[in-house]
Every structure is written in C-alpha cells, then in structure tokens.
Length: 451
Image (cartoon, rainbow, N blue to C red; front, side):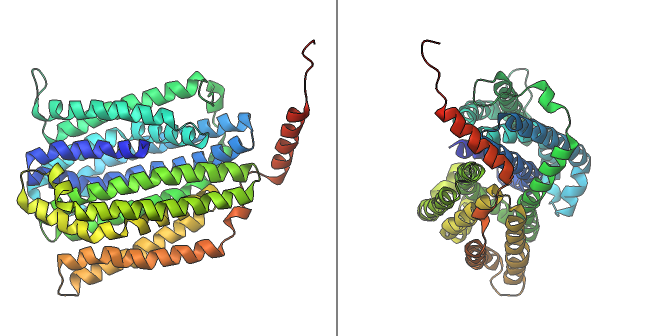
C-alpha cells in the first residue's frame, strides 16, 4: 500500500496536468523516463541497504544493523547530489537527445530541472522505506506517504493555476509541489530513524564513513542499480521511438504508463516484503522457510496482478479518461495501448518477485543479468523490429510488449529453478553460529524473581 500511494505522486501530477491538455501531458511524459532512470539508481542502492539490514536483523546483530543503515544512507545521498548536479545542467541536452518536440521543450525542461533538484529527498525516503520494511516496520512509511500524497494533491493546482501571491506556473508548478511534499517525507523519515523508537536507532557515530563497508554495500547495490537503470533506460529508448509517431502517441503512452506504473509500484511493494522476509530467514539460517516464502510470493504475484490486468483491460477507457477527461483522441489512443500491456501484468509481477528473491540472497548480479537480457536483448529489439519492419506501425510497437514479456518470463523461470539462491547468505557462517548461540543462551537464562 505504501508503494501504491508512492505512485500516487505521479497519479496526482498526471490528474492535474491532464487539465492543461495534450501538450502538457506530452511534456511530462518526455521527462518521466529520465526521472525513472535516475530514481532507479537510488532504488538499486537502497536494495543493498535493505538486503544487509534484513540479514543483520535476522541475525540479531544490532550494531551492524545501525551501521548498515547509516553507511548506505551516506552512499545514496552522495550519489543523489551528483545526479542532481549533472541532471540539472544537462537537461537541455537530454531533451534534445530524446527528440523532444519544439512545442513542449520549455515545459519539459522546467519540469525536469525541478525534479532533478528533488532527487536527494527522493533517494533519502527510499532508504527510510527500505530500512523500515527490512526490519518489519512498513507501517510508518505508509503513513508518511499517505500524508504527503494528500498534501501534494492539494498543492498541485495551487502552484499550477496560481492563487493570490502564488503565480501560475503551469507544468513547472506540479514539479514544485511534488518537490515540497517529497522533502517533507524525507525529513520525517530521518527524524523517525534517529528517534530510536521504531526498531532501529541511528547515532551520529554510525555516519562516520566506513569506506570498506561502503565499498561492500556499493558493490552489492551496483548490480541492482544497473538492473533498475536498465529497466528505466529502456523506457527512455522506447519513448524516443514513440516520439517518431507524434505527440498524440507520446501522450497515449505517458497516460497509459500511469496504469502500468501503478502495477509496477504495487509489485515492488510485494517484492520488498518478499525480500525482507527472505533476507531475514537467510540471515537466521532458516533456508527452507526462505524458499517457501519466495514460492508463496510468486503465487500471489501471478494471481493478483493477472486480476489487476484483467480489470485494467476491461476498464481501459475509463482509467485513461480519469487522467485526460477532455481529450477523446488521447483517451482512445491510451486505452488502445493499455489493451496490449494489461494482459501481461501477471508475468511482469512474476519476474519482479524472482528478481527480489535473488537480490535478498545477495545474487544481485544474476538479477541484473536477467533484466539486461530481457530489456536490451529481447524487448528493445522486438519493439524496433515490430514498429519499423512490419506494416503494423504503432500497433507493432505495442505488440512487442506482450511478446517480449512472454519470452522473458520463461527465461526467468528457468534461471530461478536452476539456481541455488536459498543456499546463499551475506552473513558469514561464524556470525550465524555466534548469533544462534547467543539466542540460545538468552532463551535458557532465567533470573530468579527474588534477586
């Protein structure tokens, strides 16, 4: 549910931007793949933090739990600042590279630059969310997200249309509102981590740079970041290909992708829960329970997201109309795209759960390889071939999504079945033995009540 409301940021932005018309929707759509790419790096590095904290939590190593959280946060904040600087200065070149139509360049540039400034808050909240989930406290991020999403929904029209001394900023106003609410979410998250009242207590000395640990976390998180980035970069390439079919196609893809993002973020929530439990059981050396947990998560994913896909297929025009109520052309085109992508929601969720299981076991390179192959050796080539070398045109591009999804899920399943992920752990055998002995002594030791 926290992931559901996280994507509500994009939903509320899309809801209000849709009131400005086709070009405003297209302007935001051109920016989103770039932002997804940048944010995916933060998500990937946060996966390293959640993997380490989950396993240390399972091993009941409180000292390393706090250090893992703090050092990961240091690493992620540093990366976010670097990306903000590069992204802000490079925005004009990025939009030119994407082939952005001249009529939407100004709005796209304003939206993208403001969003780049907010990366540090985005990344910080990802860390807070992943840490709390890994120690079994996912409720707090959920409450924070609900509060900030409601606030964002109220601020979007205020900054977009203007009110009193606040000028009408249009598309840029939406980005400003999101920047403000996400900064609030990040600050609340940091306060809760330092409070020590929610299963983890960060201290300032935990933030003293431990470059050996940061290197370990970075090398663990790098494949996950590459994996997430490859997934997001593929959206950038796809958007560039779609741009050749005009702004209507871009707008249709942008608004239709809002529904896909709902499914993806919800599946990432399930994947996060799966990774937290699998990592915790592996850290506690309970390998069979970890294996059963992963299998249960796969069943939930294929059933739940297939049902969501069926609902999206049936209600496609109404879902698109929610975001763009006054543009029949975009509604029809967006619903048409959704009819191609909705049937494979279950397959996409299935792949994401497999990836999260491998990451929880520390097999981030395997998860990365699967994503790279499925996106860059299967999906992108099929999209290019179907859209350029057939008579299907844009329909060929849409058709490539279910075709590549079916091929990829077979590959994921084969690798998952043949791997021995449940035999792996990032916690050494000596640490596991010491922690097990400590738990047994603690359980067996009693203190007389009259002492």
